[in-house]
Image 1: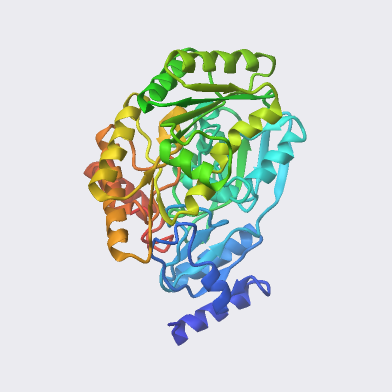
Image 2: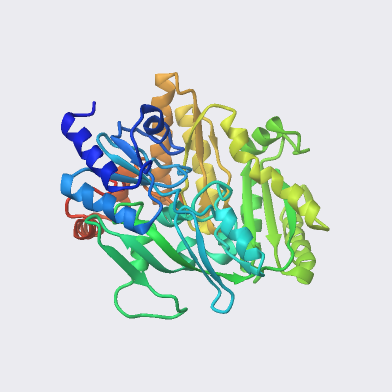
Length: 460
């Protein structure tokens, strides 16, 4: 319930900003309460602020600091860990209105952008001048670059090109008190001082609000070709991944579908996928005239290691068709019930153990676990599907989710490869970091946000 004092504070903020920037009607605040992890808890916000400039963000955070009002930064709210979910009495700071591509520099190969720019829009804009922005989360047609920066998002191309942080040169950030901090630089090299740019990337809105980013670009890749291989033994698929990655070839992507994911996709749309298959690998080369030889070599490795069927694309249209099965995994699984989507990463040598562990957890909990993922870099997406109206099923789903966390850490991995900690994995962060690192990171948070108003309750 909004108190008179809170209402007065919101009126004060609205008066300090252009008309329409602060919105407090129930329909708008309700619509902004959660990200895509709607099963994570969310509170009742005071209002939504939709700034269009750095100066307006400064006004918001200076006001929030004065009134001790929590601020939850948001992008397109495609996140999967509850990191953008509202907390009670918070102001939701939607950054989607700051959506300009300010500059594309073909000489230095950088782009300067605001946080509300959609990932795919930047990709298309730089492609028009022969350049390439590699980070490509599955939500790239919807997710904002600010959200990608906040979670250090990855994607299909990470196996060759790296994650979001690998392409960030510099940032403009508004701190909790309203001060503007500029970190990093435009140049490709620079080692003056601590690397606060890397600190900000992946901080999930807990240290400040990113209002501008200078991003590194690459020359556009050459035309790509794709191959897909089907296996009747998961271990054979894992061996093929290890052999391909050790061969010296650098796939532009290397994706995996387990047997449940294959069946879900085939049930969702007839792709001609074999329902008795245990595993499917999809790999791509983007080396232009060399791509055909690359995918043929990868297909041969798969055949030698037990693949029962290998399809090698001969052109771009066939490549897109082979990739379609991977792109349909999320909507296919989404048709089956509520989903607790994970993003653990383990060393490639432990992938067989990870998949075997999923089967064990399913047997112990009775909950089906789908496990597609970016297998080339060991980042998998175990997904527990359950009926949200069945409280016993909800409890078993949480049990399975926690068991997956424990399994990944036990295999020398991490609780999150690209989605972030948010609310969903907060209880596991200390276990992964250890007491010394956890305490140090909390102290860093306190330096940047001494009043604790920046996205409180997230990560820590």
